Length: 345
Image (tube, rainbow, N blue to C red):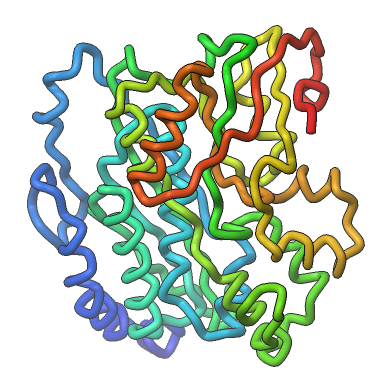
């Protein structure tokens, strides 16, 4: 008996590492110490000494059941972007700069070329966020997971000067809400999607005129990474008072998270274009409009609260960073105790 006979292929693990080396190296920042292949990732904090009071901020998340669609389509080169996005966007919400990222891949069987594609996506996401990929783990789990399947999660660490933390504490009535366009569904609500549509290659490869491409291509569109857009806003001199990453729970759960007591948010649904995939999901699943806004990002992957006099400057800074932004609402006075009552759509 050896490890391979028990279902774990050590040689495949070595090959995976060899195939992913260049992808990992392409993300490294000057602060990374020790190169590739150590037992732990080392990152120098020398550069943050200039901050008055540096604060580390972190985020961890996975891709969820969007991976099921990747399995059916045998497309694995973008789910890593989703994984990075889900972590670094949360860090950006606090005003943080992502510094480094680590991944964890659990698989039924290690197929080196597939693992390398996943890591390529992770590296692409790290480069979009300006974070270094300094470590990871690929764990083979025979008899625990189907051979062709895997799970993917990540962990990111960033830094922000305490005085620059985005907490929402200074949000006031008459501040405005700026929405950053999403690329589509991102990485939430796929458990519903998988119940609505047939999860077959034929179904996912069906072309929809309303989408302008196949259903699978639309659903696999990777999550937007907003790190550079938010940095562009702060570099322009605008103070971001509050920020919400619109993930699971949609508008109703996430927007109230940035609001201080005594305030609410009014969102004008017609103030920006909603991607057609959401109408298709709504109609195909007979889902109420409220449930759609309570589940999906509905075309806005992140929202910011800023002073109303900074609205135009904020939108310009976001668009200079390559993203699309809209003035979508305002902050109002609200004495409601429940978060669900603090959002008006």
